[in-house]
Image (cartoon, rainbow, N blue to C red; front, side, top):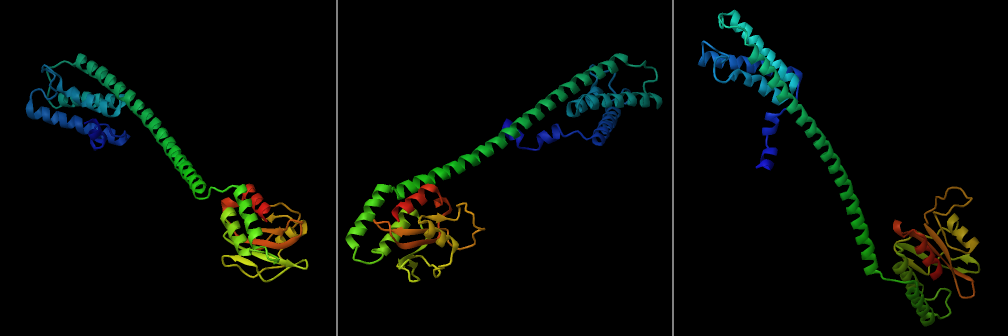
Length: 299
């Protein structure tokens, strides 16, 4: 029942937001309505001052409960003004001023108004706390969703590709022993597929090195690659230092504008460079130290 009432327009009608002009207008309208009803029901005593209960006091009490103590005092002043107006037009000619009724009405309006102000402040604090808690809950929910997605991604990678460096080296040794037939780059297709499987390469090319120069004819390609750029700064830097180079390295050269992300030489057991690998496309999360180190070891 409480939840149903909270979702309807009843709370907005019972305790609306206080707007000064509307409060004044409502207090005046309720006072005039109460006097009009009193004239209709009790033409000799419109304010019911001689009745067992002072029904006219309902006007300032209702206003005080809706808008607070100041509005209740203004409603009581309107009721007091109505008594003087009625007396001037001929009502209550033989009556003395009802001091007790008016004083009691002022006190009762103040009490009701203070009660309304107190609970209005408490409701505002509760709404502020609830709003802050909701905001924090939304932030925590978003972080939890991101953490869950990250955990699922890591779990998926672990289940789908439970690879180790030991397994990669064993497979590389088997390829080298089974298909070494005197070529410069034996089993190049199998090698680049192995690199794509373990190092998550998406677009790359293996090029043999003949007489100290990188050949334009690829030994193996992964994906749709553009022709080799022998003047690429990253490729030449990797061949000069004899080690893997990537775009995130800090060198003394100017800003790199080539299309390769990774370049690395392929060496044999004697330490001679027999080929070069260039990578044009690689997942962003795969550009990390562990993955690049594994790629360098396999090459």
